[in-house]
Image (cartoon, rainbow, N blue to C red):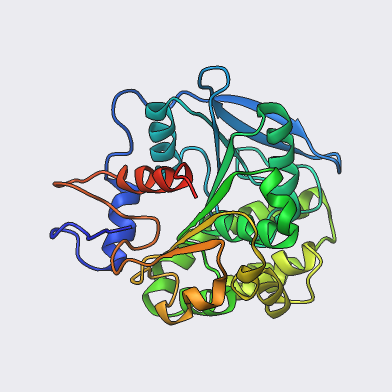
Length: 320
């Protein structure tokens, strides 16, 4: 991806915050989703928002990021791009992210590859062979973990996958977002929604985790120690971040995979990004200097965020 930020949008933080709040996400009308509720094998539910294309059209699936949804700026931009291409489009919501708390004694996490696999398999059975998947941030890491765990069989479900602004090394990214400006702004923003959801989960399932430990959490490391790790079967945050990271296993991927990270992403230290020698022949790395975290704004003020989905979908449909 040959990307340079507009002159009026300098630095990784501005390139992250401004596009999410102010840049144009679509041309014409807003995406018009039709929601389906799916029952999960463990008796819970997820909500999937669809934008239907013509019969036989390719299906683009987007796995959102931490606390994201089908209304996130990037999800709406990918919806607009899919609509322009005549593709169908689906945004499965991770549990608890569709506006209603889920039922089971669990939520979602960065290594949730089994959930990703169940969703993709169901969509593949329903829509046929032309399924492509994009994961953004947390969703991208989980999507890559699915591709890694499934090896050759992944290509029988998805033609190609792409991960955008994903924290491939959760240890490096997790500590980075827990310090300085990142802690003051981004961590506080995430915890403002994650902690109330966790407390709602505790009200559903008393004793699931220690309430006092959650209330004391001031970083994602502490939150994951109090909630994410114990609820999802990890020993602690270190165990979770280590086991869920996709970077150590990228060489196992056997489906065409694009991994896109801006080198000025404030969530992810550039030094932690993989080199081509580390990832194997199936993985393509795009690491532009600019872009921020799921930013990649383009054009005159206030900019738009359609360049990113346009570039990613071109790659997904390119012959290999």
